[in-house]
Length: 306
Image (cartoon, rainbow, N blue to C red; front, side, top):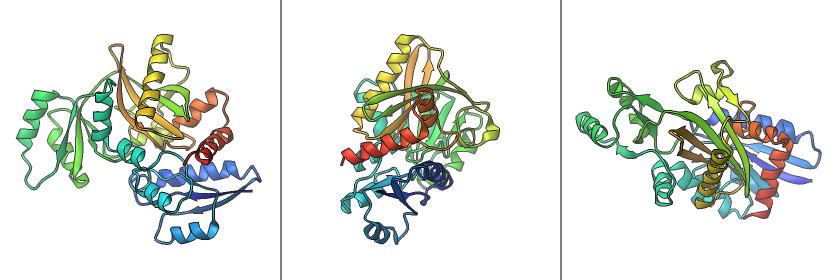
């Protein structure tokens, strides 16, 4: 039997999503008797459990900070155990929206213009607004530098900027990004293969946290995407290029806006969700890859990579 040590839950704002992901994955893996599974949280005792269980590999189903930012990966590296998804450096770069965007720009990948704001005591709102007017123009997107699942993301006009900026003060650092209208398209990479794309039409302003994880939000998922073959190949190529630039492993999902016949890469996710409403499993299903096959491919990728 293959011994799989599953990490889920954690301390980020995406804790509940991580637990839902783990529930979905465990339910599927239990259908196959060749797996011996142990689920645990990354608490102060998890390294002791890891050493006692002696797994063949760790299935990292954590989301957000401490789970996909290189922190837990560094612990697993020190324990010399194989684990799923991207490594320490790739994870830490991908979740840092400022650094990853610099890498994209330096390698001719189109991404919205932006600048970082570090919250300091009595920060000057007028100067920030003047800088936006000069460099970006409203509307803009406000987002934490290193959160996932669209946690704390706001599309804001000049009129409601003051209201929204204070909601993000708790994050210490945020990215202020030029808002790009247009179609929301996501592209998934699995190992060294282009898995496919999906388009989203949320009833909300954009594909935010509620649109992602609330069945009541009723985001429309469109697959196949009505797009030319040239653009289909182009967005897949950009996603693969970003995946390789950051030296990702396993699965990654790149989020794009398609506007004026151009693809703008918003960010790359190194550990996309695997819930019933998640996009990567849906793309895989369309390609006739079952949920079990998808999980086993992620496990296989971790088994052959260190």
